[in-house]
Structure formats: structure tokens, C-alpha cells
Image (cartoon, rainbow, N blue to C red; front, top):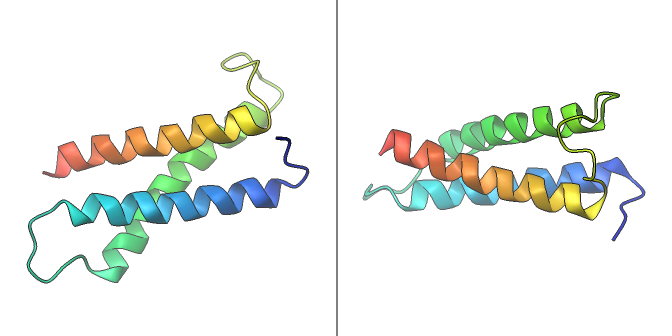
Length: 93
């Protein structure tokens, strides 16, 4: 699947960062539940980190991941967000 618009893939990354952030805070033992501001802030951090990888991959220096493009890049970045979320959860636990 090839995404003609970068807006679609960035929108998908934004949605997955919100889902990953919410999932991370569900696992904390808090009787009141996660604060909306904290969830959105952590989603912003996760989105920013994945955006840095996205921009680095689309720049003229395609040395790190030369074969990633389109759907493969989006899949890699969603997996990257899950790994970042898991790492942040283990650090904050």
C-alpha cells in the first residue's frame, strides 16, 4: 500500500501514539485512572520521537533504512512507537 499523502501517514502515527500512551497508563495501578493531560503529553513525546525517525528517513540521507518506503515505513514507525512505549513504561514503573 502506497500512501500518496504524507498527511495520512502522519495522522495514523498520531492516532497510534495516543493509543500507545493510553495503553501505557492503563497498566499503572492508579484507582483514579490516567489524567487526560498526562496521556496527551506522553502521546506528544511518543509522536515527536517517531516524527524524528520519519523525517530522518525521508531526508536525503537514506543510509539508515534505504529500503523503507510507503507502507513498510509506516509499519516500522508503528512498531517503533510500541517499542518506545514499552521502554517508557519500564522506566516509569
